[in-house]
Image (cartoon, rainbow, N blue to C red; front, side, top):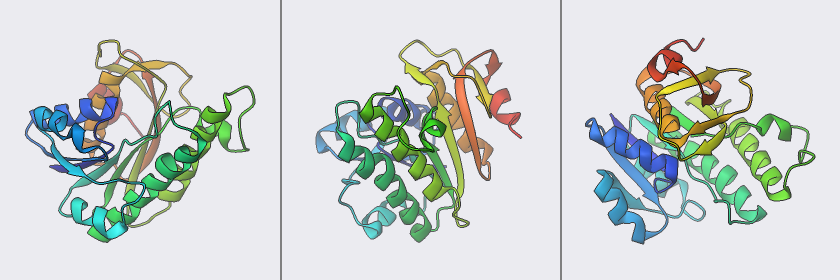
Length: 220
């Protein structure tokens, strides 16, 4: 497969890029900082330097052309303010959807977050204000991309991310209770979802006992 990853220098995204390239897939990674290109090349990923906050649909569509799937794994990051939650976590996700449609790429995998449902009625109570904006931006991204008939969108909502070694055993499904999950296992699930070629789903992910491939195959 040929896979485009937006936000390819992120912690989950780099793990996914290494998984895909190691098995022989062609991976193109969109990054904003040209200094990160060498890291991607070392991972076996082809870097494409493009700022998702200022790029045009046509510019991103050119990079996405001939891809079998696009992955949105970009994020403004924990040190960013509220404004960039809107321009990256929401705006860039929509930009990628627009570009995928223009390039004729149907499959879209959106990395989101558990907790977005708490933002459906506004900023969640008891949550750090910036985190609340982040959850609202992620929810808006989901709602902007999922209805598009030209795209087969899968939304993956992992719980709290850790750097523990992956176990390749997870809990994956709908209405999963909040928990944590290693970034290694998030990347493994994303790769399996790309392999499965699902035609749309919103699923939550935490650590568990079910092997990744079985968990993905069992999705209704």
